Amino acid sequence: MVFSSYLFLFYFLPVALLLYYAVPRAGKHLVLTGLSYAFYGWANPLFVPLLLGSTVVDYVCGFVIAAARERGDARAARRALAVSISSNLGLLGFFKYFNFGVDNLNAFAMAAGLDALRLDLAFTVTLPLGISFYTFQSMSYTWDIYRGRAAAVRSFIDFACYVSMFPQLVAGPIIRFSEVADQLRSRTHTVTKFARGVAFFSVGLTKKVLLANPCGKVADLAFDAGSLHVMDAWYGVTAYAFQIYFDFSGYSDMAIGLGLMLGFVFPKNFDSPYRAQSITDFWRRWHISLSTWLRDYLYLPIGGNRKGPGRTYVNLMVVMLLGGLWHGAAWTFLAWGALHGVLLAAERMQGKAAPWGGLPPAARVGLTFVLVLVTWVFFRAPDLPSALRYLGFMTGLGEVTPGAGLIGGLIYQPYYVLTFLVAAIVVWACPQTWDWSRTLTPVKAATAVALFLLSAAMLTTQAFNPFIYFIF
Image 1 (tube, rainbow, N blue to C red):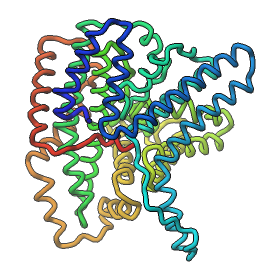
Image 2: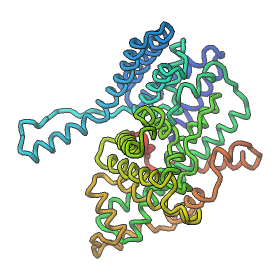
Image 3: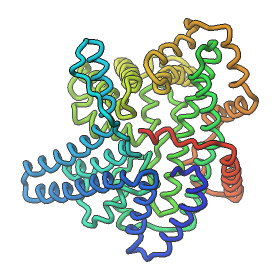
Image 4: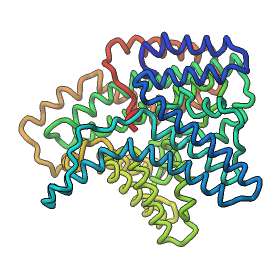
């Protein structure tokens, strides 16, 4: 079930809100947890025990860590933390990387002529929805208790509600327990907050349906083409940059909006990333909940920038490589992470300033965006040879066949070009949803309603198109 579907918009969501507001305050978390498990199990009920198991393990480990800290038993606290981390990473590692490991083992065995090492399995492992998000979220809870930054929650229902909350369960943002702990104990439900949530959700739905999906069609045509002219290749990868931004930020907007409808205030997950003036600045603005998670739970624990420049560069590479692998079990994601790691290290050598720091801000934004586009090629391409071939088209070094011009008749249709231009205007000239919805006027409210109705109408013309980050 996806947010941008009639099933969710006109059946699940109205029923969920009706049930949530019909029960007294003491029962809201139980109802919300039940709704979240129903939402999660809609695609495959077999995913539900995994979510429940991860929740139970971290709930128990949280209590053990808190009790061990109280009596000064550091060893017991470390053991409980190790159980939490190993269970979460083990769950994530098996379901996300098992197939990748088998495929690469078999490829190595074939290349080395060691057929005895091949694993000819009659099954493949299915990736559960949202596992990359809820394992990180649940694991951060026990880690924060261990570090004394959070207290163990007594109610299992409250903790299960935190882990499984359907607005952000499948594709984030990654909410830390400390960010909602007080809200789980007490929060307000107001008409103003609910109205802002509706506006947030409407803008997010618009981003997905009216901008991300059409840009995605252009990107698909370009990346699936056998040959491209230079201009077409740049147009295609820019369309993908718009697609992934509006797709993911649209989902985050909808998640934040749904949270507001339920009385929760979730943190911002995007801050106009394509207006960044360096790659370092880009990662302060893109998928903020993940970048800050990697900073606090990986980069800083392995030393951060406290052990000299050389170690800092190594730490940046490690974090970005693992960040790339978090996104997907493929060499293309590792290459994407490695490129960002190299760029971040290069900027760190310049004292966190971009190498073109003397240029005007607009030029720095443009150059940063070009670098991001180059890295997006690896993120979007199905494999490394395809990525390198596409980069060849972008640089004019690829072999352009006589039929390459035919792709222009598809990707430069007026509807796609208009959508592309609107997307560019929104990216570089329009206010963020967070700021736009802060104060709702009658005009803004009418705009939000109009956008929702237009997006809902457009859904009838689009095939099923899940969010990109659902596969992560």
